[in-house]
Length: 46
Image (cartoon, rainbow, N blue to C red; front, side, top):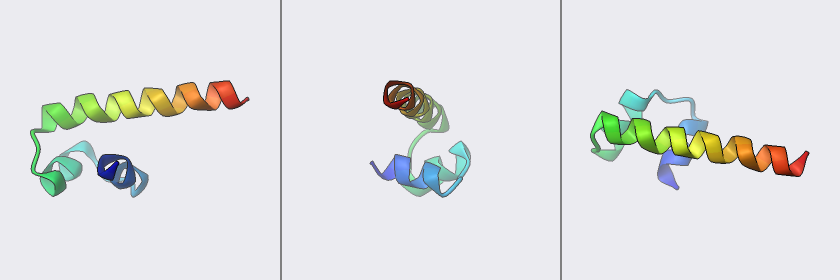
């Protein structure tokens, strides 16, 4: 949830990784999954 909030603040994956104390590769995977989920949700609402 916090990652999604930070994405909404338009932080880079590198910045999110630093804020959350995570590996940047893990953050890349997490943000990719969240972005695809948001796109899928928008498609269903249209």
